[in-house]
Image 1 (tube, rainbow, N blue to C red):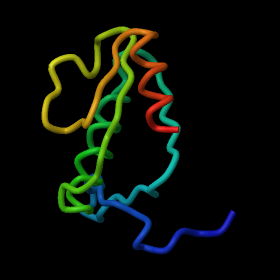
Image 2 (cartoon, rainbow, N blue to C red; image 1 turned 180 degrees about the vertical axis):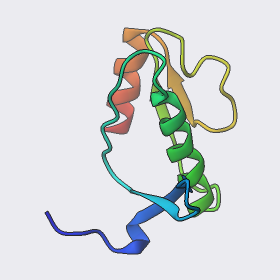
Image 3 (cartoon, rainbow, N blue to C red; image 1 turned 30 degrees about the vertical axis):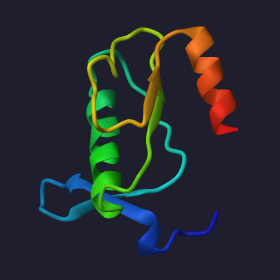
Image 4 (tube, rainbow, N blue to C red; image 1 turned 180 degrees about the horizontal axis):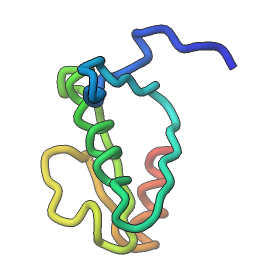
Length: 94
């Protein structure tokens, strides 16, 4: 796998030593136990991407549990919460 150039990375925070923590744009898998901070990583990624694109990034979400994206406004172009709406969202994006 080739290293990605800096233009394909976003700053999502700083390490304990103050060095910027960069995350590659594209697909990122975040795993962990319940309550381990996966949501914080996701929101740092989203906020960093919004900053890097000067707010021109279009986000779409599908939250079948209505736990993570319920009540989120202004950040997502569209959010689906049930299977029917989620499938419509996928069809629209394809």
